[in-house]
Length: 128
Image (cartoon, rainbow, N blue to C red; front, top):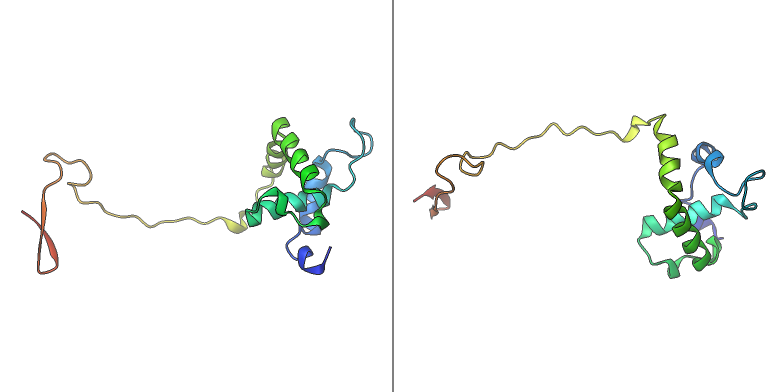
């Protein structure tokens, strides 16, 4: 793969967290996977770009094989299992709390009387 494709690939620290939960490792049933990290990077590339599977760069492997493997993992719930294992150690780096609020006029909030007809006078909305 070219250096440009490596720019957004999963970093070593993140890979170290999820690698133990990957399928296809030595000692597991089903054989040894060719390259789990390349597969995960291919899935992340698809999710990041929103491109169809057929547009997957060849450096990530055969698009059809990657797509089939992704669907198998979805059906078995493996992505959810990996995320559940990672949730035990939450990273609050991206946590944002929105304290803004909007005060709604009582008529818009379902108050008695319902919505009233509104008219415009010199750029200002007033009830008729």
